[in-house]
Length: 272
Image 1 (cartoon, rainbow, N blue to C red):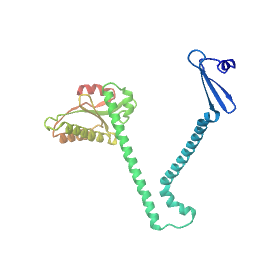
Image 2: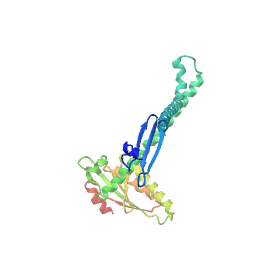
Image 3: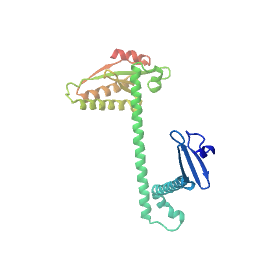
Image 4: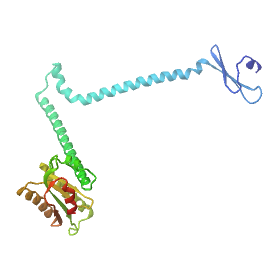
């Protein structure tokens, strides 16, 4: 022990000291009280063996991962482009001619796929249009409840009033009385939703108007009219359709002709 301390091999009793001699590494640490020293040694080759193997493992794993990704990408590319490749590769290479009926079948398949994609896109556009109409109806309700400005309302419905707020519209408030029908709650809810959808679709066709349901469960219909027969026609379509579908279980309130956008809220309060 004295020799170890004297040579500086164990300079601090609280630390592990080491020294390398040729191909071995010696470790020493003073423990306990007095001059008790824990002493051991290892071959330098054995100490660095794990780190050397770990480096090799990491390289092997990375190479294997790259090979796996390459195989997957090649497989997916073949699966995605196989139909078109089968149809045109022989023509481009000029190696052989395809049978006429085979070409016809491939073309029909591509036409069928195109038709399916076109149908899907049309359905998606229809869903987006319906969502936009529902969103406009919701903003119309916000306007009636004074949570949206008149400017924003006119921007949503430029076909009702011009930039100065001038136009000619009517407002119809509809309340349903479903007590006589004695429908279950779920059927009544579906009936109300279907009726709203029918009336909303009619108003949205040719941009006739807008429909919303307020907090009192009234349907509020605002539609543009012209002097004379046109106003009577739109009004009769809305009211007569509702009366027939509800078996006369409906009440209506009709506003005076609205010629300025500023009159909408005051007429709405009168109808309620």
